[in-house]
Image (cartoon, rainbow, N blue to C red; front, side):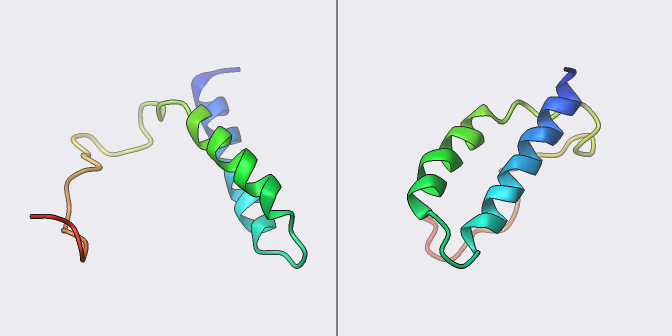
Length: 67
């Protein structure tokens, strides 16, 4: 499996888990157990996902952020 496929598959699993978490009678203990494991397993994004020079920490301050 190449890096792009692994990244896309993990994002799809996280998306499916998020949808499941909002269904009636979802097992939230399952969501709480699996969600962090999937998030941690998310690999570095493959080249080309973000534009050149993209910095995820650059942007506006959110309310409540320390100066």
